[in-house]
Image (tube, rainbow, N blue to C red; front, side, top):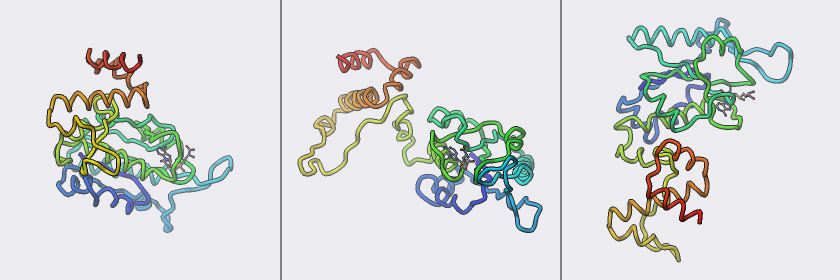
Length: 250
Ligand SMILES: C[S@@+](CC[C@H](N)C(=O)[O-])C[C@H]1O[C@@H](n2cnc3c(N)ncnc32)[C@H](O)[C@@H]1O
């Protein structure tokens, strides 16, 4: 999968492209990350990409032209590579809340263009004319779109077959089956006064699977009951799950 990222801080992306699971996926060419700096498309000698806001107020606004010229250059590059351009996504607190479901949907596209905002805002005319989808990482504000973009790219890259050592591990992650992940343990068997649950030591695979499922249900019901409702509505809960949940509630 290819990611085209518009950013005035391309160096930040080495955190994604050079480390861990995502670094390995880039190295193996499972993910391609191409960075585009709008300063390279600015027409003045100082490479300006921002200006003061009409109407006054604090902070600077990113200008339409360097951003739009960058997006056009990305699209031209797609054409040259015989790629059909995927959606242009703006990282924005106003956007759709990012989720595992949105990650799975976006993964169906062969490429994504991610626009990282900086400063106070982006000129709305750029957004209206060039952006297909706005994505938010949550109800908070960070200083730029780079960290949200990297979080989204990481969530997508780990779903690419071959990106994880064992493809099963992504399937077992929280949200993949609608529930939160169950608790995990490793050596030692006893740490100070704390023991690993007996069932995990017995080697009985069916019992371990049941215990993990029940812990997932229990944790999700306690911390995120909304996810239980959603899983129920999506037909992800079995009769045994429902029985277990009823007993828990009692
Ligand atoms: C300082 S913020 C601008 C915040 C803007 N004034 C507002 O209140 O909505 C600069 C950039 O960071 C990115 N950003 C900030 N918070 C974000 C979030 N929760 N999700 C995604 N991107 C975010 C956006 O790209 C935004 O253009």
